[in-house]
Length: 136
Length: 284
Length: 100
Image 1: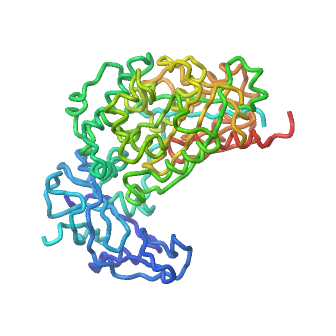
Image 2: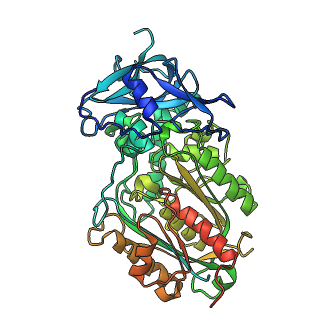
Image 3: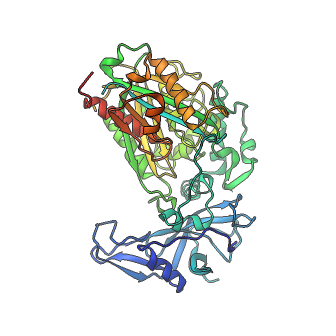
């Protein structure tokens, strides 16, 4: 992994900014101008206060590893080696699911709370945000 | 309205007349989870567990212990899919599915169905079976995406649903004689015990280390063998309710002597939803 | 709902459990439903409320020959049936039906 057989997201109008950002090498989040909270996944309103006054911004790309499993039964398109399915906590607060790249896919290498940085991988028209160990 | 029928049926294993699961890559899960290689519940439902384990010093043995205890209950259930005793080593050496989860920590895949009929307590007096009263219920949801669960060490939907049910029934945890916690995977009873208030966060492992939930223990839990050993067709909640009803009627294969209150707690999706029903067998 | 104002009077699982290749999904619903009806001493025409998940409640009501006055297809996964009990209890306790 990664390989080019995986199912790819179909962007919707509300998520277009996110996927355009990934293509441009930028992890984009939204925040509410009223209550100042960042949130994910994308929505055209703030889920904390309901305000429609929200803005898109470029996140730092820094995250830490919150939890994961190492999948030993890859579905079609994900090769044959075990790989981690991870959830990371972005520095800005929200969490997202991802894969960890440039690292062995083992419990020894993947320590909870380890610092990570975003990196993008192109799959045709879509770029996916993965995370690699910070400093790699 | 007089008589309500609730039905369930699922050809989880044989797939006879079952619709194919249609994946929608434009849904939120399609965009933000599917591309990272999730492949069914064993790769999603299990993701919070490592954080729970490391936060509370819960080990792979503790997960294995849940499977071992539920097999002890299944041994007493003639309709259970698997009844032979399991050792910790059997579980810890079973095939790796999604580390840290091994095959024997994951639910079965079977066929099955169940149905309930409810009516008012007044009408219930005229029926052939001893009525099983609904003392309290709860429901809630959290998120359809496991990655968006607020706290990986606790289920908000469990806490909200459980609290509603206990409050409505007007009971405390010490009043509970029999407990069912939907066990699609070995970590769920641990989360359920904590989120339903039977113990403090992180303490559920002791219920298994000290044999409290096993045959002979003071809090019989998943007495039919559960999703890990009895049956699991994809949606298991109806079977937790069925065992709760049997225990209240006094006819369960592994009957808890003198049980008066049964709590049946379920999960939907990957910690996405929860429902709780508290049964009693004494007229109120 | 006042605790204890609603009761389960019929409860059953499918005749067989585990491997049941001779029944389709709707057949499994029906087998369990018929067993629960027998347990309660009722016939399908005695039922006036239907709740289910995994199948459409319209399909279940039709298959069993039921004319419902209350319908619930809440489908939130495996715990849907707990929600059905909760919703049914609320409906029964509030006396939703006005005719016998």
